[in-house]
Amino acid sequence: MSTIAIIGAGSGVGLATARRFGREGFAVALISRNQARLDALAAELRADGVEAQGFAANVRDAASLTGALETATEQLGLIEVLQYSPLPAKEYMRPVLETVAADLVGPIEFSVYGAVTAARQVIPSMRSLRRGTILFVNGASAVRPGARVTGTSVAFAGESAYASLLHDALADENIHVGQLIIPFGIDDGQESHSGTAIAERLWAMHAERGEFRVYAEPLD
Image (cartoon, rainbow, N blue to C red):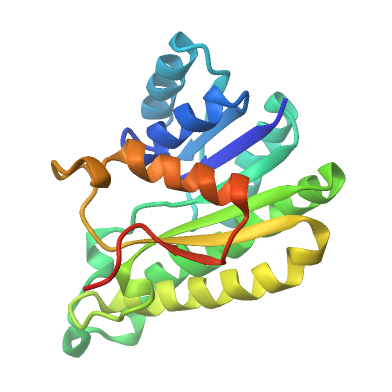
């Protein structure tokens, strides 16, 4: 059975993506910081017939993150798909003139160090399978910096650069790397903005292996 690991799993896009891939026969490894919430999500998925387990980890703690991915592999099988989509903390979003160097440590650890740690951990599994997909999910500040969200703008830019380089480096190994830019609020009442709609786009990115960067909706 193929496995998808969703880093930053929650009750919105994470759960919707788990259901979408679960319908295709994937086992699901749910990864975030709160084990109780993960257990509840996994139970919900299992009730729908999807094999799922939760593994608590902090993306800013490399040992924690690699440990969760290792355990997920041991219990569910080799990871074929990785989704890196943790939700940044509000304190990462300070105005540019109020931001000091120390304010960038958290965002960069979160979006860059965590992304690199996760990718490095799962690439050997994908090479063993001779196929794989790594999906990065970011807001609009990844491609259009915002003066009021400095930390995420800087960190998402780094994550985007790494993801793009990874895309080029792994293309010849049948490992697709893609980035989904979501420029709107999720589950804000519009059907096209729902977690289910986003999950469908993520499935299409995995299945169709198109361009590196996909926009859930055009930027204004």
